[in-house]
Amino acid sequence: MARGPLVLPLFLVLAALAIAVMIGIALSTRASTLELSAIQERAYALRRWWLSALIVVFAALFAITIPSFPYLKAAELTTAKHVPVTAEQFAFPMPAMLPVNTPIVFDVTSKDVNHGFGIYDPESRLLAQVQAMPDYVNHLAVDFKEPGKYTVRCMEFCGVGHAYMQATFEVR
Ligand SMILES: [Cu+2]
Image (cartoon, rainbow, N blue to C red; front, side):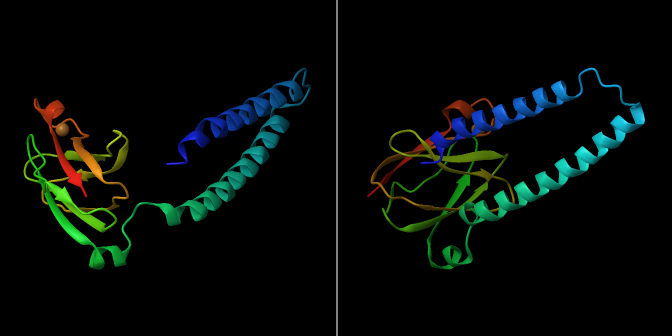
């Protein structure tokens, strides 16, 4: 994922901006002789402006990023190879082998309690994850680009055997 290294610089820029705004406010209000009502009026105006700015920024971010959300596209549901997974305390029954470069949809549910179905690639990086819930099927679309040994680990505390709840499968 190329997005990872972007997070820290982005955070630093936003944090610097927030600090600059606070310093600006502190400097501009030092030794103020304004009446409380005038301060209140200015603050409310600033708050309205800030809310509008946030709405615009978040609406734009939402519009830009929604196409890359990992929600299932209708086409993937019909054309992909479906692999049913019924999690249970404390195992993930998985096929031993899955095909590489093939759209796969895991139909994930649970026999007993909530589990977290997390797939790790051969380098132990989290590739995809979804909740495994009783009486409900979640669909997780994955297209394995690299052959190798993948690991499924439970990502939600589900009982005494939780830490040992994992499975492996081969992608070829
Ligand atoms: Cu668990």
